[in-house]
Length: 271
Length: 52
Image (cartoon, chains in turn orange, green):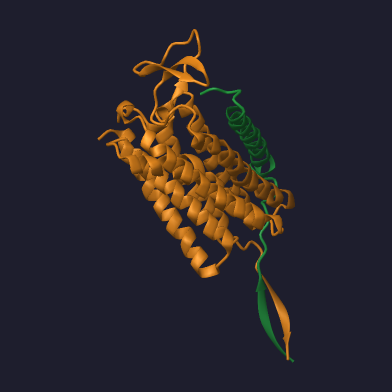
């Protein structure tokens, strides 16, 4: 077993611990942001596990889980938890409904794509993130080394494609950027905003550092995923593991009781 | 009159700390820039400007 096959399992184990920790908090406090964070982290863990599994063997439902929960939904659900925590406005309920309905719709589109998967291109020698999508090869460009190409008709034109697991123009792929933009804005933007507010007031330094770590962890996995989709997949598994560690550390840091620098004893009149 | 005690805790960022005075604000700005770059990239993919 290579290090690249071990790392995603380590990330999965950390995400499992992180998910249990957050869901336990939900069960104690019943605050809805813990529930959204817990669901999003469970999605992240499912995606990590699927990635680990697909580095060893093929299974179409594991791929379903990887794409839907790992590539599409997890950041949006974690980020939505942050939005619920920071904003108590009426429109958050509408966003919640849109997120739930949109997630089910993405699941439906993914189910539609399942019978059309081109399983013959799958290999365990590359991360699944590098082989899931069929891409049109532009004129004058050459296919990456080892890639399988084919000629097909797309939107009335004859095109050469680099074959991938999902067929060209799969509608489910159009939903992913919406979820990821929303997830980035709310998860990273929310953590940066929270860190800034505490930093500006010069209070609760543990929450400043905790939110900086959460934002850094989320940006790390966002950057590693983007680099992978650009063909630089060698950072992905390490990026995922570091991201899981940094975000968990950030969450623990932000959630721990503030260090009491100034414990004061005040006389309280009693009847 | 009987008096009891109540403890209140407060926590402030340490003064004259390099971490809080310099490192944190720079990190927040850099992370904000990276976040915007990633959002623009995702929006580019969505609009078909970025092919990958």
